[in-house]
Length: 552
Image (tube, one colour):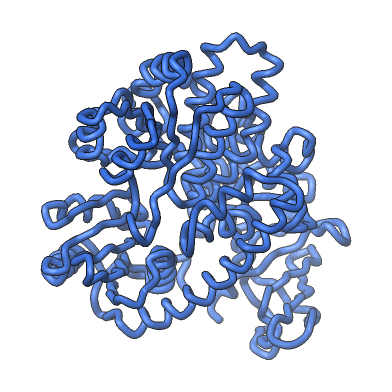
């Protein structure tokens, strides 16, 4: 295992070293103590926001039927929930509904058939959330059948924008300084903008913000957008409300969290691995409405939906693991692009399979679900940090029926007769773009920590770097020359852990290695460890959460 130190300016205090790695040289207090108030931007800096708000206000005055068209993932579901709840609950506007595509039948995004169905239902205004930026043909069609279209999205636009009433997207908003909002973040900005134009008093506006911010935080973390700038303020405030002000939460969210029975304060880990996957499960495997119903219902009704989602999520895990095994047998590890294609892959988990392969082999991956009856193959793509997925997709757009994405992930659809040639061209692209040095997986370690820096009063500052996630990873440190004094095995069987008591200079520290109980015989008497500094909530003080032993 190779590693690189991101900062070796050891004359500086370690907290300052961590700040420099994150390019925080000014407004340090804003970074360490972010608030929703000091990070939020004016929503009207977003392209077409004024047009969108004015058109929605007029539609409500006309009592028009409004349809919120969302994506089927956690970002799309939280986005659509927020807008729907805002209209129905806070604006008391009943003539609004939610519509999702079917992942299996429709694939991603707005289709002409959806517009035709909505026209028959008497819909006059469609507002997309977390999709729509590439729906150029659909926007033209909406005009021809008399449906007004407002697009809110955060994905990468094509060369041309859809001819909608308004296109609200930070990626095509030159005046908006932060491009990293999730779809739910953009939907929330629309809510903020509408509140600006309303007669609702400041106290009530703040109540509305606090009602939605926990949901916006969940969608933001789960969509793996950078937890920097405005997102940092959103997530910090959302988690604060979840953990300390439960009375402000939507009752359905309180019921959801109670069902999960999370003992520790909820953080980004719980969103990423417990909350988000359950909301995602419905749209991945069956219907996004199953996931939406978790957020729309309370009490016994909600409990039935939660139990259903747990069953769906368990099935998802089994199908996912089976898919990973199948894909492993198909990929060519000699190629710089890992791709697999099969009719048997479940369209709901191909993105997870691609992500797992990229994480394991440190190469871009592309997993196709082939549908002969449609004559199409649809893929999810993932890329490691050195590779830009959307650039590769755009370089081959002339082969594609539909596509979209961003730097780290994307999706595309291609006619089956073009599939073989597309894969060859993309393999050649990756062979040309990827260097041997890119393929070498190197662990990024923030800095080396020294025994004299082992001070609890300073470690509390590390916690202020949270919330941790994409773009702001939890700090990793190198601890050199720990002399092993005693080793304890914590727990039994395969999931046992190792607790190592070590002398480190003049400090006695303990290192906890999760799931490595069977490796006690392999530990050297003196070792260097890469890990994190963690608060010991049971015994007080701090410990090292070991991840790697250098040279072992």
